[in-house]
Length: 85
Image (cartoon, one colour):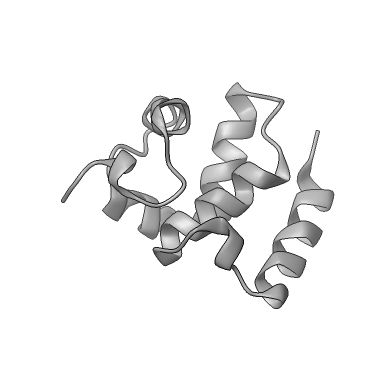
């Protein structure tokens, strides 16, 4: 199963936030998806920015957030703009 911190882009703070919102392992994060996980984190941390969304998507895909393709980043940016507080 592994730990959340074993995923790319996931450090201690984001891992703790994920656990706080009920996402306690990599499998659950992949099932929930980056967008839903980000929305849950945003409920407990209004400062959750687009870079956290990129990081979560990268973690789901198993890559660094800098390796996300242009289309994915554009889609995530649109999602972020529609849902930011």
